[in-house]
Length: 95
Ligand SMILES: [Zn+2]
Image (cartoon, rainbow, N blue to C red; front, top):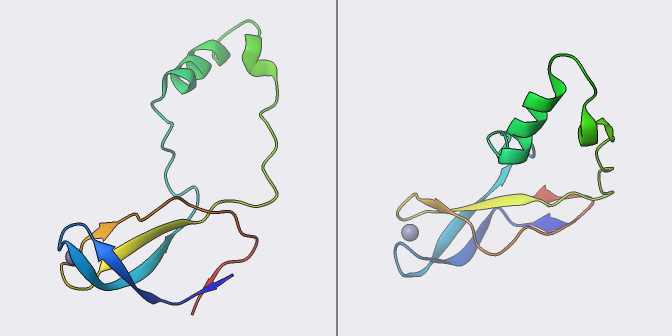
């Protein structure tokens, strides 16, 4: 899928339609679940002696296509925000 580098979108800060720069955030740049309860439990359970319990099971396979994480930067107020949800595409390009 190809997408233009700038699009006209609604800016919630300016409260009007302005030009937005499309920014693609690299997937897996930051682990959002690092402090989630299940992640902390896994760390606790898998250290030291003894089995890992339910964490012995290998994690689920990755899906064939990953969601793209897009941010929109308003050209007027220079603030970034997310419009809508991510979508699954095999190839994604900004032109
Ligand atoms: Zn704005």
